[in-house]
Length: 203
Image (cartoon, rainbow, N blue to C red; front, side, top):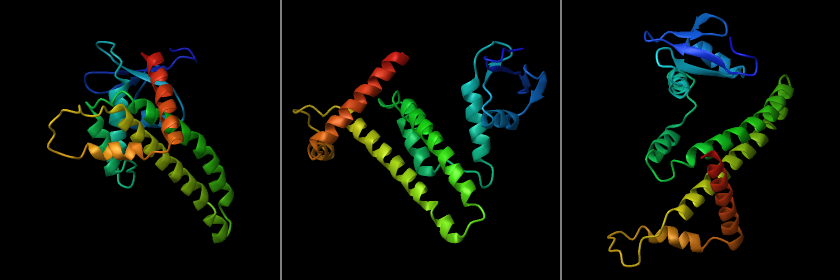
């Protein structure tokens, strides 16, 4: 049995059954989803090879949840953008960006939960006040995405001067970048540098 400071080991067998070594019981994907919601740490291992298969199992849980009526959280535009990043030169930065965004959102959600709890049983006017933190959260998310898109443009090299591209599309990002304020550009460069330092420490 795993120590308290170690994640619980979930073994997955060839028949797709999942075994919780912490409770010595068979569990389902729904059980694992509940463990995640409770903050219980676990890793999933292939019972035969011992390989860590936590990532594909968590992905499978999301797939199952997304296919339940009324539980869709991932909008189609987001899914399309995410798929487009696979194999792209920016793929290595996306996980870090998503992780940091979710951490920031998790911190904000506690404050939002308290406001929701305090608004229950109050007048419609009080309930309308909840829209303020929602809009603030949406605005922060929009700013994060704009910053990320600007960072990607800075990472993308400009085509060589002598290239014979048939499309004039590459000139548009160049014009947009030159129109950026110097302070904004400097801020983007600093954030990219910080992101790169983090990637270096992870490698």
